Length: 284
Picture 1 (cartoon, rainbow, N blue to C red):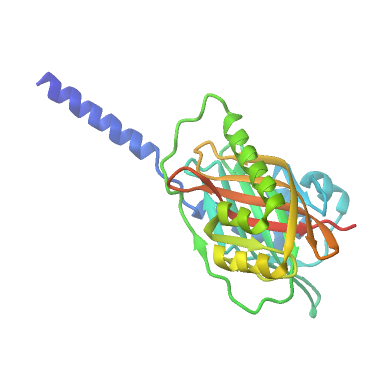
Picture 2 (cartoon, helix red, strand yellow; picture 1 turned 180 degrees about the vertical axis):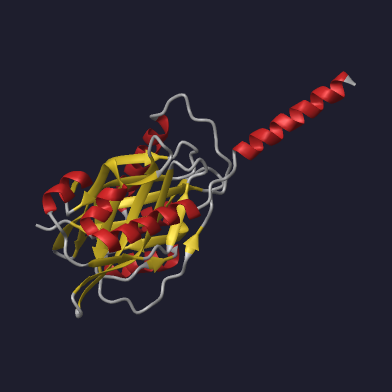
């Protein structure tokens, strides 16, 4: 009888733990972005950004700079910004998330800028998602509607590593390895590191989805890429990560400079793959 009671108590404890470790829902980051759009529409781009920005938030304008510094010095920014997330993910423990999709910036009736954005979010000490990175790139008015890809976390929260820097080191090392591979062959590098349903945001072009289409684009453009990692981060639960840096992309005799951000996800074999990559031009 004593063994049965002990087993029953253990069962209740296990169920309680399982209930406490509910998988986070992507709706949390979509709600955060919805709030950002609401505040931006009400108060303007500058105040909207400052309302949701993490104290360490970075924007690329075009060089990376602290958001609070950039927007504090920029004054009021004219125009109406509308961003529509088409892909979003959140980590199992909810500490890291991202959204990406098309945006429009309207200045008056006829002056409209089209482009794509990527935002990375992380939780603050109160557990509220705050904007950590924001980057964008322009392209002509899109002709195709983008598919929606929202997914809840696929795994249960894990116990935090005793070494909080180990996760970041793994992503930095993987990003640097990919950059080294790019130096030998961009096609081979993307074939090895890009997720089959990866998304590729390249300035001047509409979004590309899928490894096959992205490889075809890179081959047709005949570009070579030289990239340098300058930072990275990973969710405590080990199921979502990001990296960023600078890239030189050469086509023929022309070389242009870019900032890049990559979103990484592990596959079933725990190999990290690029889910999203975006390039934003650095003006000379």
